[in-house]
Image 1 (spheres, rainbow, N blue to C red):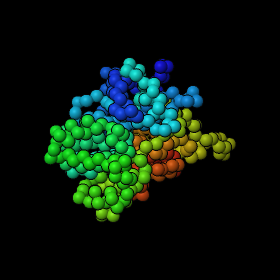
Image 2 (image 1 turned 120 degrees about the vertical axis):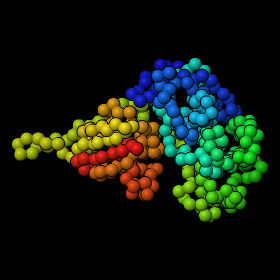
Image 3 (image 1 turned 30 degrees about the vertical axis):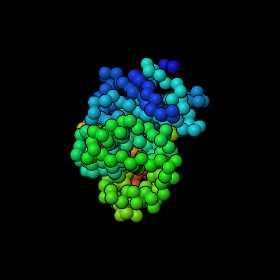
Image 4 (image 1 turned 90 degrees about the horizontal axis):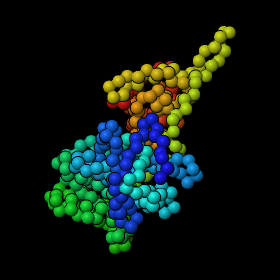
Length: 356
């Protein structure tokens, strides 16, 4: 493999083992170097962003969920299922081997329960089992939650982690119920049939990951059963269009003629609280907040840099900003001051931001 070039926030992880989970799904067991281990502490349900060599010669970035649990002592493990025509998934499954190294961003994502003690309803389809398995193992190991998992697949040969799920159910017979839904036997999971299957568990916090039609059907089924929207959490798969590993280019403030001299037009100052430290930075009017932070050497969290994953979410406590794109924050989040740093531009001369 070619030598990767490490970005400011990326770390080199070694592929310790490649496991063939099914004919179409491979797991990568990853090991960060000793000096980076603390950067890869994670919450159940989070994901890693990998830098891959792109088909056009430029780097490509792909996000893959962690199937491991931070509470079991197991090493980092991501699982990748082939997608027909998908460049990233096929490259990973065909090319990576033990001993290879990858550039990887630290864990990110908000598809994770606030508590492992409240009972959970987990629904997965295909490779959507990956973050769901992480949540299930964590709840069973470090919490008191009872867990119901409905797992939909095309047929029995498509079931990823079949043996691991069976062992978990045997080890926790009174706390874990795994229900398999095989399209080859039961047909597609319709809203009505899902509602019937999920009715006894509709009052639980729900985490849903899988193909869009499945997630839509599950959410509709739960809502018809009276489940509040804020207790239904969905994880989306997406491919990144830009090189999120590239160093950001921060434009200078615009200069204009004022009374025979020059003055900056727009922009101002960002005061950002992150990890207990406060950073005061110049914020040019056309520069994105995340780019300003990264260019200044601030280790701000991010993953997609496209407004699609919420990893860079922060909150405005004073001043105003606008977002160029927002695919993840709802109206309530925005009303509470939450913004995506990778899409935020300043509207006032001074803006105060917190990541706490």
